[in-house]
Length: 199
Image 1 (tube, rainbow, N blue to C red):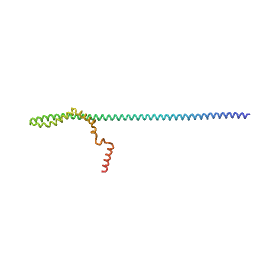
Image 2: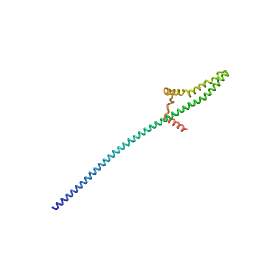
Image 3: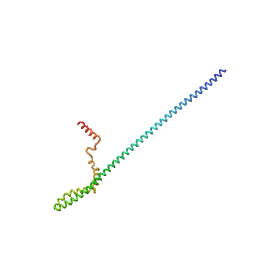
Image 4: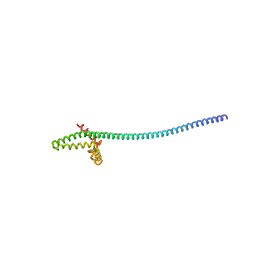
């Protein structure tokens, strides 16, 4: 009887110990499963966040590249506009210098023409030979041209005629064989180098 009671208590203690071990083992298994699930969830979130970050970085890089291209295009247009304005200002200065030269020239030439005309007229009257006044005719044409250039509308008429040529007679402005290209220039350069190398 005593042995049966002892064995019964031993079985109870053993079953309790087994139950406790089973509970702890189950908790470990469940804890490992939860940790694995959390790790996989974190990895998934990290992958999604990294993909989102990569997408965001690519979009920002594309936007920066587009802004840089727009800035370069605007800067090139601004530089081209400045070059055109600079060339136009240089042309205006050259035309102003030409008109100023004509006005200064007409002062000296007008004085010479006046004295020459008076002298030739006095000589023709004194010698009674009107043929002496013949040089006044070409000199008067030169004086009229310079006066028209300096104070008249010659420059305006020239500009109108140039615009008419550009509109109606544009073929007159073309250079022989067209505009030189890079290939033609390289071909001529290579031919020149071969010519000098053969010498």
